[in-house]
Length: 52
Length: 465
Image (cartoon, rainbow over all chains, first blue to last red; front, side, top):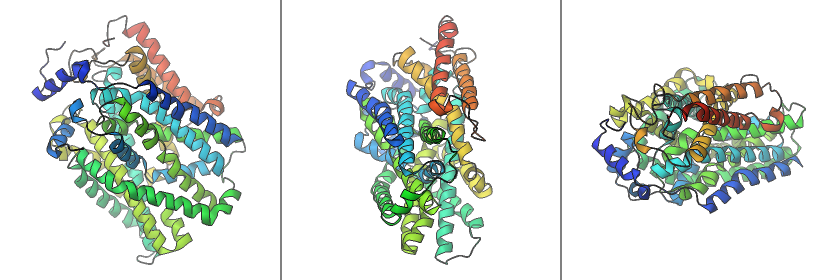
């Protein structure tokens, strides 16, 4: 499945990114908290305020 | 932020993944770029549409809440994958759609960004004409030739800026940032100071009589407006080294400017029955204010148009055949359609903005639902980065390069949206008034994707799960 030739620079990039140490980290616990506050809780409170 | 421009442009021109060492945008840089991309005069038109149904308080609450919900969905769909592997929105959708089916997302990106850019450039042309007529430089009827001329000039400027790739985008954003923020705040101040009483007393012109339906429609307009950030956001957040760096800039830097600037359009249409600041600022303060407003329109639209064309060009680079073209030629493919429509069909998008917004919801709501389910739940935030760039047999070749789960999810989402809210007439069916159209569409799209994947794709050993 992986015998297709890729451009050398693309091959180099892929090899590096296949190593988890070279990948960007995902959301932290704090990020999830911010996401919930700004994307769910905040909008719900705002909608209640707007309706009143 | 010391990326060598030549190196940066080379990476842009390939559409290949950015290595972590090449991703040097911090929160500040990302915040500025995303905010400048979001702050455009479409906000006035969005505010104007909401002002047809809701007063200032309800309109502000509905637009802001809807926008943040829409941004939440887009952030969940794109940011974790784009920042982990340094890829744009289009590449991040290949695991779901397959190594041929992903052209669906390229088509959606291409058409939506061209549509938005047409809207921006036509708005710019109309503002120029409006101001010049008001101050007596040209006579009535100048709009007929001024809108096409302004579109061509704007396209040439955008092309020149983006010859330097993301470096050009970042540099333009830095220059525009303070101007956009400052004048935006000033315009809110002007409206509230001089028209506060009129705004408070104003009633929406086209309110349906059903308060809940009007409120939900305001929320829906906010959600779909921000869903349209899906094509833009990946090419920008991939410049950040991790998801943490991009989280708040995405939610607040890209999510909040739209409702905050839309308040200007909302308040203006309630008080003065016109959302274009080049028109109502002249009413409030004369030609000088009109010139300031026009400069704001130019600054805000230029930043967004640059970001949109950049994202489109990066997406096009991944289409077979486009990858070998020089970067300037790819840029032309992203810009020329905008110029052609701006010259020959300037009123097409402007007169059908509501339909265009619904189009965004019809297609992008199931798309984000599918991506969230696939990347965060089914794949547990891991993809085969190599398979994304293999055009032949790979983990993402599915059946003929197309994932039937994604197709089923998109089709189910399409019909769900159409049932809940007719994009042409805005006629609705229950439970639209309680749930909006976009949220159920995203849920249905993601759910159907999950079911087909579990029943068909995974048992067949396809998809690299």
